[in-house]
Length: 430
Image (cartoon, rainbow, N blue to C red; front, side, top):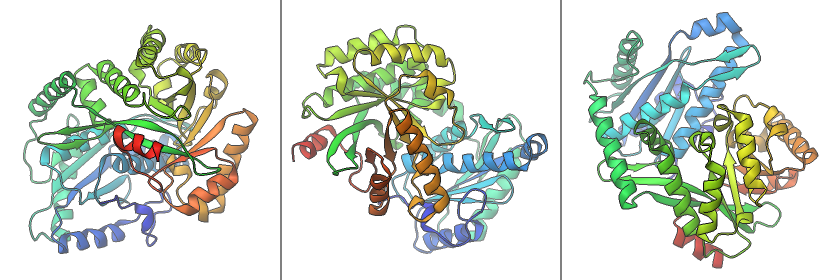
């Protein structure tokens, strides 16, 4: 079942975040409960958010809320398979609803990782906002009403907001025993790495000009025996707690290169680089050796880096990426246009591609301001001799517009969802 994007709901849209409002969320929740769906819910609140408006002004507060809304949407799209809806509540509150069947433990892991994403700093014109999110979470009960579910969420959020040392609280009041569960999950991940159970999928990429297959981005998934599917975000959150991010990253890169070895020679492989990768002194040498051992040509490799990856030490990152670019690899700045972009990176890094954040494509076909922003980015990229990749293309109108405006490549569910190495090889040969 495909994810339900909040952009499909036109009524009651919040002017600041672009998300549906509370009435739309109640209506959709009522539909799911009436059908007997197993509903999971998260109500997110921001502690001391009034202080942000006082310190930086209401406009900076609105920027922060818009960025948080995008983070919630993107994380839900990446991690949930079934229908979901993100909505704006009152003040600094957000509601995330899901009809994606999963265990209680999986929903708690999802909530914890989402809070980690939301807590990352947000740069605004007036200063850096450091969100302090809290969340109530629950699973809907059989024959529960909309009012009952939302009341339980609201009461739980009130309690967790009053507890500075706690971030998550279940709406039924049960203690989470998070420490014990986290430790068991970390042990499970280490065993999964040893047994080679981390799966690598490939998200196909296409040429905008002629719709020809041009390559794929490697993505990681883990089918946990009890919790079900865990996406890349959850995987790396677990690995970070277990201090095994480097091991996980290297395993994904190794398996992705191995799976791409028999691709036709004109197809490229895109690999994501983590902060832990780039801060390692010997990353460039070790990664170059990994590519050489795989038999995959370096000139067919693209390394995707995000602004978050570069925050620790952009000068060191530039040197490491420069060494790999010198061997023929290509470098892409990922999630471009998400939140506050530091244009200094465009000067310092050996870039070949800008990969647009999916928020830059959402609604662009029907919004003159969105189109103007897209054209400005493409003009800048052209001046810097950078090719642009459009991410999150889900409609033919978006693809046609991206091609018409000058994007070189695109990826998204319009043409294909992530697939196994065997499925991608078959697609390439067809």
